[in-house]
Image 1 (spheres, rainbow, N blue to C red):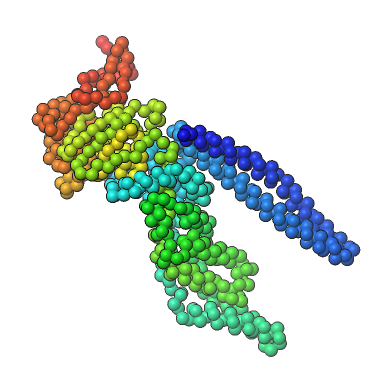
Image 2: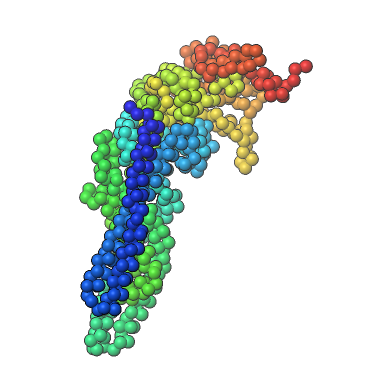
Length: 601
């Protein structure tokens, strides 16, 4: 199997060769267009001089060739642009493999310090898991991917189906790149979604208005008839003139309604047409997994009309409204046919017929878009595995577990097993020994497992469960919260979940670090004794070695793990490997001396 990085490099090489061929074909087309356009003018000039009809035929032939080469030039330029975009897509993937996620949106808007785990696990923001995985091109896909991360437990009943779907999409790199190409350089944004939803929810006031319909069908007939009769000399010229003016006044009376549709929708014509292309890609593709096939089958109106065609109809109507902003065209079309009124009625009719389907279609679009991001993640990490789900009792059995944001050649992996409820692992270790990173490693892979994505491990068996963590707590001046109070609120949230009967996987890093050591120790012990009572499991990272003694009082519920350090010849070494037992070596004083903060006397 070709390494995925090599595959991208080979694809870039092949596309660049194709681009060179296209450039050679396109090179002389502008000159050919110029030659035949000038030739057409020369033939017309010769006809005027020599009055020979042969020159007319030659002029028409030259003009047709000009049109042909213009069309050909545009086609080739489109193909060249497509090559450029595909090359950029491949280069962005290579960048991501080197840890550079700057080409992709980081999801800063989803950062929530009060969320039960996403802030602690760095799921959103620059260089986050979302930044690493996100390849969404629609606002619906982006929001859906964020929903996967923020509400991972909600997808526990679809784990197997989603794993199969992600695996299928991961193997189809061409289909996924086609999806990215559709919106390349023109992504939909939250404002587009909000304004389109606002329009869909607005009332249809014109469709069933009898006076409106009578006016838009009757007056154009009268106006056109009066013009014909005026030309025939049967009525005075003032009558058709008055009818045209009347129609323009009527159209202006509906100007506010027209401007409302224009302001909400016409600026989105380009994006809406992209959605039509995106949907067409899905409609044409044959999916093997039932989950994806079912999603595709739900993309229809009454099981008949295709969404891509329906969205394209709206795009066409909006193009007409947009073109109608041209004043001479607007005067002509509205003065004769009340064209704006017919467009408003057509748009309302479209909304009345298909409006209830649109949110479902966009949700399915978002699902495909988000799954495609996870499939890309799976494709870029073929060494990752799809986890197994434990069905009955709680079990977490992970071997060679690593953090997906740490390059595989740099990552030190670890293994862990937790079997049964009311189990807590106390992880001790010195500063910088890897405790917090390990908590995030377990939590991050747990989230990926619950949404059906592959994980960084050689083995991963897990029981789907809600996560709640307290790893990164901060004070808040705006909310007048001290660090200690913020931490207590976090712990209160965990206890409230457990008291409500929710099973929870708990990740705690340095319990009560905002208070003095005596209170911290007593409070930590009391908290752990309380947590053990509930149907929960967890990992507790701490510097407080005394917590390791809890295994004596609760041998069936507590286990001790640690990260050790070694200090030899005034040099510290850390292997970041998880071991059984309680940590024996600490390093705070050593590090302070190394940095010149403490000086030996």
